[in-house]
Amino acid sequence: MIDFLSQPWPWYVAGPLIGLTVPVLLLLGGKQFGISDNLRTMCAILPTKVSFFQIDWRANAWNLTISAGILIGAFLATLFLANPDPIALSSATQADLALLGVTEFNGYAPEQFFSWEGLLSLNGFILIVVGGFLVGFGARYAGGCTSGHAISGLADLQPASLIAVLGFFAGGLLVTHLLLPILL
Image: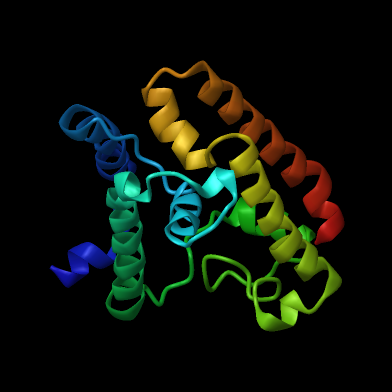
């Protein structure tokens, strides 16, 4: 069982499982799945006079439960199911990344950038802190994160989610091809 769980699941299994979560939540509970709104919910638990945080956080407690489950699952997976093998990247991708100076492929993110040493460098600070802030700002400004719009919003046929997903995709292409070669 541990061997089965520790292997990557094929896309045709994992994708439908994730995709079916959205209609199940909608049909059974009238709930929209989303993670990025949990920060607002957590802030709403605290006493505040900021109108943005004055919502009924108890109505979104189920989503906090899902987030807690994700954290616990990630912890257990890291502790018991970690795969010690290097991440499977094609030789063409490794060659392209080597041209940008990325030569470590032992984890999900190169340690030369995503580490405490990397954080203390200018490029690492821009990648981790500025990039993280922009992702958070973009998710708040767009009314949801990439996954929320792409999985839940598109499943709901929301035009705003289609625009957001197209914007996220275009932004990703621009950063990958224009900004990342400069930062790396």
